[in-house]
Length: 409
Image (cartoon, rainbow, N blue to C red):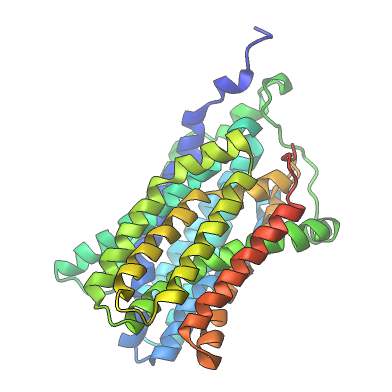
């Protein structure tokens, strides 16, 4: 049997139970909540600007959870951390459900972001530790695809429930149900790590080591990687988040109604979701650059299409085409940020580095709304698109220059 590739016998069912099913439940719940946060804030008396700040607290919470999350995972392990993060999310949802003031809702959204960041980091660390290198990109791109599925299904469930006459507070209940399902799955199913730790090293599955490295020391030791590959990846994260902000604003600026806008963005979301496995196959077969650079390139093309078409008679057709190209680019990069982080992390103890990695990339996503707002205020929405083109090109150039051709581990 020595000639048999042992990684072919990797226990995918255990990975699916421990990572994919809870992720799907979490993502569906989160997807049911995110579109309605500004509306709920408005019902509590928030102005449009304040409602935007409340919605942004989700990203702030994610940033706050990234670095300490790595320490928590390193100390307690992946599955206990995911269960603990789920319980924290339930606390946040209870606070949100009973909020009577805007500041209470903002605090709840912050804690929600914190819990989701820690859960996502633990999930990422688990996949990095146990999935063999030859399957890593496909496993992580599937994880990204499941998140995209949740972001597609969750809003539909929320919309259906509200259509039945329930109040906006029902979305917190939907999210709580998804969170409880995730926790129950994690508790009921056997912990895969126990089986992996008993597996001989010859199987190619990396065992956990007992020693733990402080996350701030990891940041110092990996400063060069974070400042080069990390910043390039953060620009991809910025472009991804920017599309979520720019497309609705663009639709308003060219006079589209809400139904048309939602239909276009929904179709684009379907295209995005359909490509998640293709992304993983490309990364595993040809290398990470063949996913991340075309992803940034297609997104640069889509932003260029928007920038050149705003005042044309066919602006709506260009908007539809740009949204589809944007979805193609984003779908082709499904899972790439998680995969790059996994490639650069120490396979024996990945959580501390992944905390720093997620902090870097999440910071890029957090900058997107601010950058778009700044460019619109000092120039125009067209120039905001031009700024995003430059960001995509710069990010692709940095990754071409600095991204290692061979994954670590």
